[in-house]
Length: 210
Figure 1 (cartoon, rainbow, N blue to C red):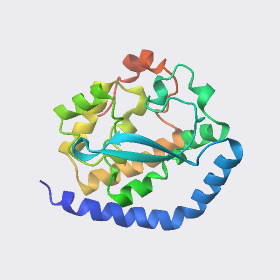
Figure 2: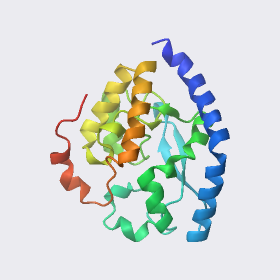
Figure 3: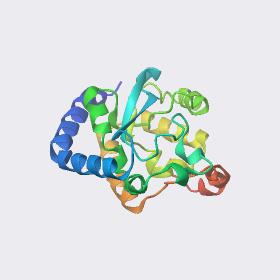
């Protein structure tokens, strides 16, 4: 086990705490916008798998109507636009809906960098990640697979990318992923909505970097 893995949780907590202190005004503004634009709670909770497949509830700003399917990835919905709210569309495009996961990091459920936490019923992804020991570390707010395709890549490749991160985890790698995430978010790379994404996977996975 690398020495970095022992200090990584401390770095996560300190950075998440700083982030919360700096970003709380944005939390209030986004919460108010959600409340004024649609009925329902500000936050959306969903069961995910954490380190060693331990279940926890991930937090997001709610971007969909309250009658949307709760345990299905949005990119697999046949008509996601029907469920996504107006403010939700903006939040998802800018990834601002992920901000509440700072709370998950402070609680110790997540890390800043790591494989994105799988839904409890994404059995194919969970099984593939087992092959690469990617279920043995804390999931992240962002990760190597996220910046190499996100919703556009097939499950097998996503797990392989997560495994590459696990095998090469380091402070330098985390910094690299964090910086690349900023550019990825600014360009909205890899964000796909709707079941048709499965039909595009084969063509979009060419040239992905390991």
